[in-house]
Amino acid sequence: MQFRCPVCGGALAADGGALRCEKRHAFDVSASGYTNLLPANKTHGKVPGDSREMVRARRDFLAQDYYACLLSEIADAAAEWISARGLARPAVIDAGCGEGYYTGGVADRLAREGVEADVAGFDISKFALQIAAKRDKQSRYAVASLFDLPVFDGCADLLLNIFAPYAEGEFARVLKGGGLLLMAIPGRRHLFGLKQVLYQNPYENDEEVYSLQGFRLLGRRHVRSEITLQCGADIHNLFLMTPYYWKSPRETSQRLMQMDRLETEIAFELLLYRRDDCAGNRPNGPCFCIQ
Ligand SMILES: [Zn+2]
Image 1: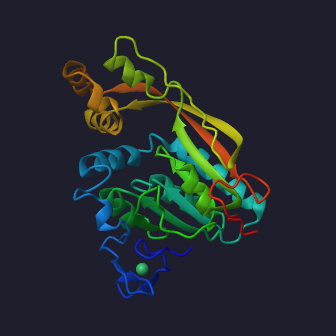
Image 2 (image 1 turned 30 degrees about the vertical axis):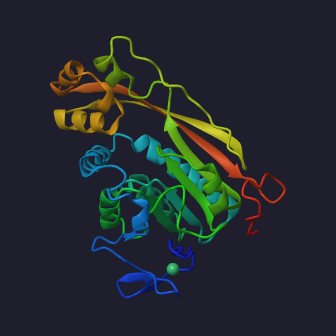
Image 3 (image 1 turned 135 degrees about the horizontal axis):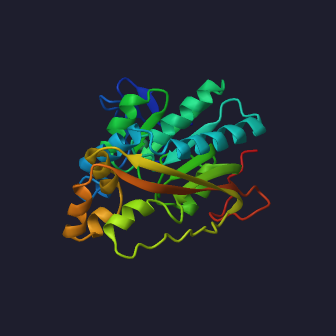
């Protein structure tokens, strides 16, 4: 899967410690191994995406494998799909990959099954990609917007979209006809134990299953478990990963911060969408089918 120049749209090729297009637009590969493909005029002068603090919290929390059940389900679905289609060198994009926990996990799983996948992770936060690129050397990482992925039309067999914004038009553009979109969203009672500490009347999440133009919903898998956070640091990290961190009153936040043990349900919905082939919808006009 070739990366595309964000300035002129030409193909990028490795050239020393940089990626360069035919028009000589150059993008340095950072010391940790990711490339910044977000044009400076699209950052509006500030560092976009999750902050260093949020990214570290998520890295440390996920490193404890509290969400291993979700990773395992995603990796199963990816491996089953690739095996059923007999793809020898599938191109996999993780759109909104964060610190690469799921990207690297899926790449590892495919490698264990003897599949030589070409895996690329994109995220708007360079802090997240510093971590991702440092620890996962088998995948490639680049800073980019999910709404403007720096790859060519119809290049991907599989696209992961895990707790990230979705961009149906862009996802339809980059996926091959018949390709698979794996999307994970919070389930109805995700983090209910955490909410019970924060709110008098905790609410359940809506499980909104989107109807995406250009895609057919093939199925959904429910992933549920109970986890016990064993220390204050883990509780703090989890809290920082959630929107409740910004929304909760100081009193209740402090109550949570004083705890050193927390039991909570976790629940996820894994949605499997198939990109329509040539006979289906073509949201962006031309047909992007490769096969
Ligand atoms: Zn260029």
